[in-house]
Image 1 (cartoon, rainbow, N blue to C red):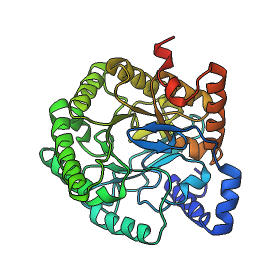
Image 2: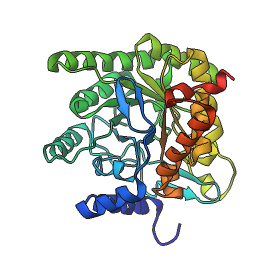
Image 3: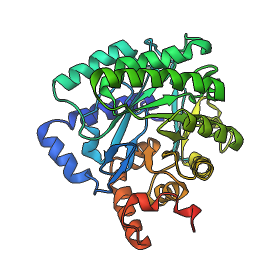
Image 4: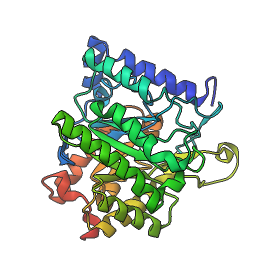
Length: 355
């Protein structure tokens, strides 16, 4: 890993993005990295382009106003838990250049929902906010038992409701003990019901629209389990599914690959695309899907869209390919749409199922 560990390099990258918010540098960044438009309307929200920043990159919402300057069409901050927590002991982030993969066992390190709400309110008051959709990833506090998880997620959502354009309920991180058990139908039902109650109440109280709620699932589930989650999501009027989180499987043994935690990047590409395909086929395209896992170029992005993804997210590609990757992907998507005769991105979603 060289002189600095992966987590230190991550922090340095965030600081560099923040420096890029200075007026002169902001214009320079936009000139270099601004993506062409690939517009779509999904879940009642407008997206200038489908390429989003996955949760975990900006855990504390440090750079909300700056990510669009490097070409993202939307962002997801967090994960945020109801209670503050330090996460797992360091080192807890590792990289494999050979596999274009990252392994992390961060453990939802974050300042907690109360401090995050204060931070986001301060950013909004100073007009340091994004003009692109902002999602917030909701995690479960490590010390909250699973039978109280519904109140933990709903409590965080209530505190942060004013700041999000959409919420992602994360029940699939491999780095919080027993968290993935919450993907089971009855457990997920409780959590989504509690979040829906908050959503409905706050929308009514403020006269605003309800916020889309999505569920982020694991790639390590069996296909039958994925279908059960899709059915639960549909029955509770969930707005979509994020497919997928990181994986505990490994493409090889030895070295970095022996580290525990969730693996992201190129080795996840095929399975995450298959999960998108299973979800789209099972729901007949009725449930919007965010494809994430191994997206690093236009071919891997187009593959997710063909399988049924309406939106995309990346994380590892930003590390391995640099900030120009969003512009490259969106230029490529426009080219693909033209080549295939599609007038919009929405027309292309799921086209592999129709060919």
